[in-house]
Image: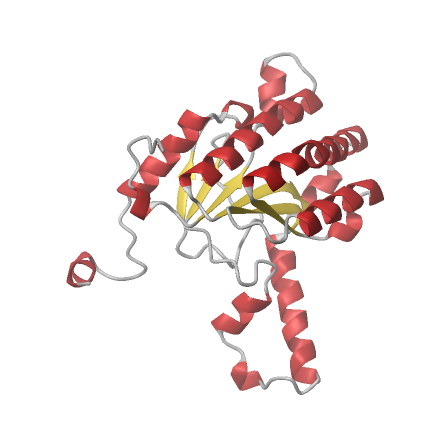
Amino acid sequence: MELYGLEKNRLPTHVAIIMDGNGRWARLRGKSRIEGHREGTASVRTTVELSRNLGIRYLSLYAFSSENWNRPHDEVEGLMGLLENYLEVEQERMMREGVRLVAIGDRKRLPASVRRVLDRNISLTRNNTALTVILALSYSGRGDIVKTVRDIARKVKAGQCELADIDESMIAANTETGPIPDPDLLIRTSGEMRISNFFLWQIPYTELYITPTLWPDFSEQQYIKALLEFQRRKRRFGKTDEQLLQG
């Protein structure tokens, strides 16, 4: 298949994306914010399809943060409607293309109708292996860490483990992403220079790529550009250049 100049053996295993800029995209065109969110679903489809075709194993999409519940009621309601519709429409495609859906975040806060279609898609796609899409909904990086601490504390209290057993690997295993490897690349659209409470535990050595492109304009070409930049990076993980050369 076409690799667009990418080196197949140097593709990221896990790409995470903060999908930002729908509202600004709409405002620049005199449209409502919900129209911007609707337009952004096309970029989701493009990114999922290209990730799957390239052989990227995991794609995390920051779709709705815990703070986003503070937005105007009409916008939140519209977003939930778009989410429900997207999941309904994409169900057949996910099965056909071998895409597995996973959701993280406080799903109890989602409307019942959204939870139903989300749970159905998660169940139907659980054995798919071509690509795993992790949808972060009502998600908080800090909330993830707090939940992890509480879960481990309960295990210590129940005698299932000792304080001395707690290490980075135990904490990582108890986060919402669990066995999923940490992101190799985090893309943020719209040019904002912040993480916005996303994957605070999971990104200590993740490569960051910030683009001024607004999410609805994030095309296949924009994604390829980010991946090419990733392949130009030298990932040291705390080591020196000399140590990397020595293997």
